[in-house]
Structures are given as C-alpha cells and as structure tokens.
Image (cartoon, rainbow, N blue to C red; front, side, top):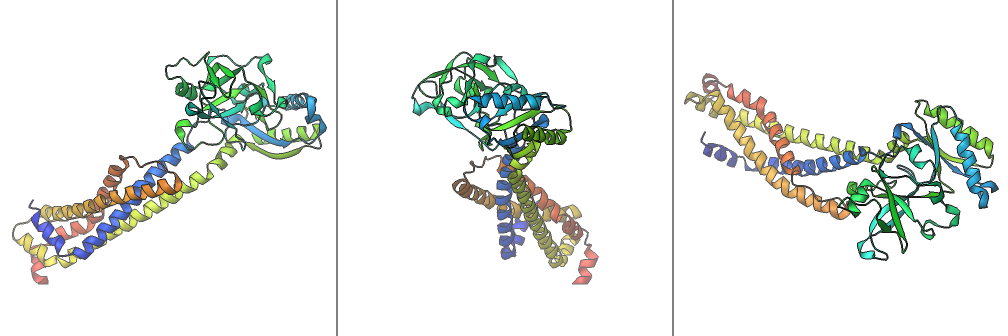
Length: 405
C-alpha cells in the first residue's frame, strides 16, 4: 500500500495529530515508569523471609520487674520461655532482639581484614540465643549451630563491646564475601577481633526490609543471649490467635509488673510492613489504567471524527476500486504512525521522568526493556481503539457516498 496518501491526510490535521502524539507520549512515560515501580514493589513484597512465617507469633514486652535486671535476668527469661513452651500447640520458643518484620534492627560493618574500612560491607547483625534457629525455622546448609559454651550474655555490654569468636552467616553474604564458595571456617572482622564462620544458613531477610533486594539477605548471627526484645513462639497449629492470648496471660501472671507492648502473628507483621507498598502498587495501577483509557478514547474519538469527515473521500476511493481492506489498512497505518510518534517522544519523557525519580526518591535507573513493553501495549491499544471506527469507514459503499455528496 502507498503510504504517501496517509502522510498527506495527517498533514491536513496537524493540530489534532500533535495533541494525540503528546497525549500518547505522556501516557508512555507514565506507563513505562509505573510498570517498573510496580514490578519493583511486587518483587519486594513477594521476597521470602527465610523463616516459618505461617507458624510464628511474637509478643513484645517491657519487663519492669527487678528479676529482669542484674545477674538473674537470664534465669527470669528462661523461666518465661519454659512457661511459653508449656502452652498447647507451641513447639519452640526464643527471645529475639530482631527478626524479619520486627521493629528493631541492628547493623554493623564486616570485612575480611581488621580495620579495613575501605572494603567493609554493611550487614544486619542478629543476637541468636538458644532456640533461635529452631523457633524461626532456619535451615543450615553447611557447618554447625552454636554450642552452649559459645553463648555470651548481653549483660556483658553493648553489642559493639562484646567479642564474637564465632558466627553464622547467610548464603547470600557468604557468596558476597567469598565468591569462591569457601566461606566455612574463614574469619571475618566486625572490629579488631576475628569472628570464625562456623555455619552457613539459607537466606534470612534483614529486619529493616532493606530496599535493595540484592543485599536484603546480608545477615550474620552471633551467639548472644538477648536481655530484651520479643518472645517468639512457633505454633504449627492454625489457632495462633488463641495461643497469643494464652501466652499473654501466662507472662502477666508470672510478672504482674510486665507490660505487653504488642502481640501479633508474623503474617500480620508482614502485612503491615508492606502496607505502603501495596498502596503504591494500587495507585500506580489505577493511574496507568486511567491514562490508557484516556488515550484509547482520544484515539478512537479522533478516528470516528475523521471517518465522518471523509465519508465522500472514502466513497470516491471505493468507487475507484479500493477494497474494504484498503480503507481499513489506511486507518491502521495512520494510527500506527501517530502512536509511533507518541512512543518515540514518550521514551524520552520516560527517561526524563526516571531521572527525576532517581534524584528525588533514590529510585534505580529505568531498565531499557520496559520501554518496548510500554510501546507494544500502546500499539495494541491504538489498533484496538480504531478498529470500530475504521470498520465503519470501510463499510461505506460508493452509492451512499455519492448520495451524501
């Protein structure tokens, strides 16, 4: 088909064509960035935490009694854990300072040499007391768990004031520190003292919900008995709500001065953690659908108007031998050229919008594959938008066009 008549027809409607191109360009820019942000948020929400989420409940307490201070604090905590383990349906318990979706998070720098600040990695640091691994459902890939004699008491000082002869790291951190795969038995440095890696576990997500999914599993477990934090209970049965209520009753009975700050299942904590992400996803989905609907209506309305304007012209072409397919292809090519112009401009706008998001919201650079995805969506919608009006135009007979003259 000769494309020259198509360009000639478009030049006669410059203003309308330019407006549609601008509309498609804005839609393309918003669509490409929205798809990218939506995918990033969905990937973040669907990350595996590395723990038995469906079986865990947490009680955060403020222990105000004298029994939880001084040298007898560990005995008081162990008494609480024993009471909680005695509840029906509870298979394991532990005191945890931090865990996935929790409100507390500790970080540290780790390196392969002492005081080598230039080559250190920022990681999450968890106090893994007795029962921590069994309660959370952590899986050991290599090495061993901590021995009883290796546990230190948090009462000895702040986390930064305790030496850690041994530690357990996640597989992601092991691959990052030792790409050759020989992390087990090697030493890392949190400060001047070496910490020997005695075990490697499956990935355990950082409590802070690290935005960068590449490093969201960089964690090290240290053998420390925490003095404060949350009581975690592993409850394989489905009645976790009743177990939470029973656990609260038991703890308050053991120490009436205690305050229960919060009690939730880990699934509820996960839902709350990703609440903002879900809102962003739905907002962008609605905005994208609205932009697509506006663009589709604009294209369809313009073609309908052109069909009415060109009734006589279409009839003349039909009388000169043009088939219905020729008329239909004319409108399809016309639409393809308009949408393509909008897509080219929209790709430039998409990169500009992404640069703004990078500067304001620390968003990563927009990967190029999202541009053809947006282009294909707009091309398909453009063709669907003009299908009805174009078919009506193609159905105009030479006789009707002649009478309208």
